Image 1 (cartoon, one colour):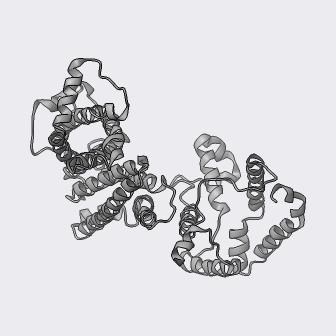
Image 2 (cartoon, rainbow over the protein chains, first blue to last red; image 1 turned 30 degrees about the vertical axis):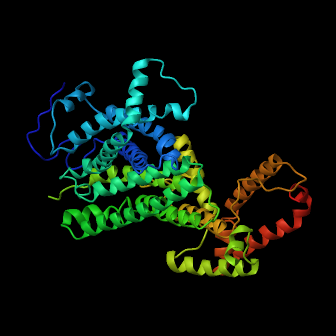
Image 3 (cartoon, rainbow over the protein chains, first blue to last red; image 1 turned 45 degrees about the horizontal axis):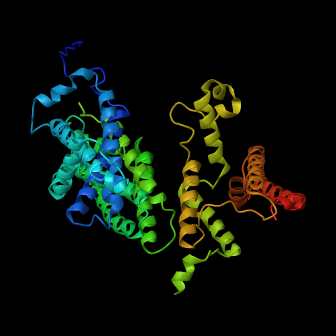
Length: 313
Length: 177
């Protein structure tokens, strides 16, 4: 490992004044992590509510996406690491004050849990499926017996995962755009909404789609409120914060953020979903596609813009 | 059940009313943005961007492409591109509300196949695109916005586009009806 010594806090290549270390891997991972959190949250929620039969896609089919998204996301995260062979050192400690420690441990638990979740439904999804080994069949029977407590653990972990994708950024107190406590709930809400969009896209059951679309509408409205509050907070803050917000209010990220995230990723889907609920014919893939696209752009814009916001001196 | 009927059967606006609304839209656009509407410009931006991505050297050398390339921002950073995006989504919304959005299909005369219809439409579109660049604008940019400012060029473009279309339509009508 090549060591680097800094004798000053100023003018450090790639760190000060502008951070230039996070590329496409980080926003992609934050997006996939949020998406998986959203899917697992609703899968667990409907099992706890005892509505497995009415919400088949949510509980079984869409849940398949979650472990895939998590593995791809973790792959991207691993790709981003400079010293890849040292990643295991995250697991030599538990630090309650570090979002990264929270994330590492949550992922350590929720990724295998999501795989077990899908595996426990394989026999229902594919008739004639057999795990071959007796020990696997016995483990499956055990999971099915304790499905509700299992769902409770997974639901709580999915919320932590969703919040963590946001507070991972807000823990950077040197980057004014990220250093806002709204980011945690904002990324959680966006993650839940993109997760729901994926389920809605996959579901063929009209009742299920209707129920989920209603929840999605509420989530998008909450997300809009959080975005407004985020900017209200910035504008009521110090010069550092208003400077950071100006990137989105006339600066270089204005169009990307307001057109692709807010207008096409949130407002337009609200209108389409509202019309769909009232019985109008809306192409079924369109609102979920726009929501998923908006969520992806949100992560990329926040990571990209956050890195160039800075303290003024 | 008037509302029910509204979005179950396709519903179109009266063309004369549509024309008046389109004219008022030009006034509004000039008021808000200080310039007129356009459509071919967005396609032009897309073409220039594609050329610039695939072969930046060729795009830089081409005197026509080069006019739209700058180091500050992508050629897609143009209000006509966003206007066209808005036309697409606005049109879609109108289609949904008035029951014109159905299963995806290619509309054509029973006498021609979908393939013929698509190929001919593509050819027609390409000719129109090339023509619009010689005429310095299309039906929106030159004819609509141009004639709204009493530009003689705009009026000539409009007369030529619709006049030529009217004159030669019968030769190609078998491709459509």
